[in-house]
Image (cartoon, rainbow, N blue to C red; front, side, top):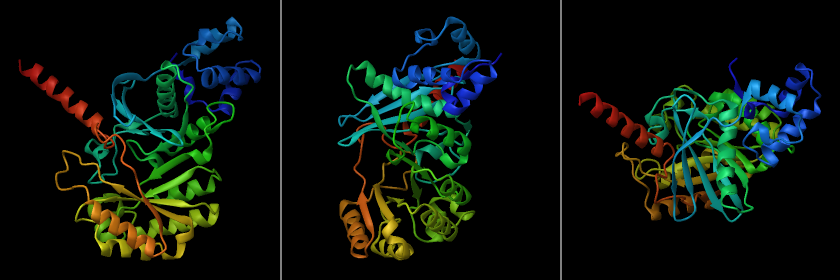
Length: 362
């Protein structure tokens, strides 16, 4: 029998499973308490559950499937974890420390097919989707790391902005969100969770229909089709006008503010005319739109891009503000480690390939 990770089951799914096995539904509450509140790392530690039930669980499920491959720690407290999956693939997870709490950035796919020309995640095409369990376990692995330090700190915020396009793995993403948001488990508030998409139009609409209070961010990075298509190939099939129509639908359906992410690339999309164009694009939805200006993290393989100068960033910010656009500049985290999303993974895979090549020639 092939075992699956128990972390992939929502509370309702676990209740249903216990009933299908002739067990009482309340077992799900007991198990979730051990998994997410007490955070045990083996089924045998679930001491208030009878032995026969533990054996039943252990015969069908496993716990941890992610193995820590390496970890980098920045002077500002940012930690980047490189995890090895059961099939040998590598993924990244990042812990960022803020005044308001501990935020974890999770990965949803092994590689990415969106093909943004500035992103280290896109250096390696998508191999597969992560399961809901593999996404949940990233949060738990980071929490275990904090637990081992003997502090009372906990993961308080989640951003789904790591490797991959979350909406391209929609079903597993939604299961993950329901698991980490559940009051019976990690109880991370929906408004403390943000999902970022490169602009999958239909999925933005589907997400609006979920009636879920999770925050949504859309990676825009340009305000006209020609420029956006040149740096984000997804725009060729899902142009700005379709993305903005989906955003209109989301705002109308949810009455929630949406974040537009805008990475500033020196001399590419950071000029005053680009700022004015962006302000005009969102002119009719300013009250429920926030623009997050992001300084670019240089990636060795993309030598055509550089981080915008501080003066250009401030000018861009000022133009938006003077045009009534709510905006801010993202504070850089982990600048002394492999800060760019996907960078640590791609570097490690390059090293592994070089090792394999050299051993093959010897």
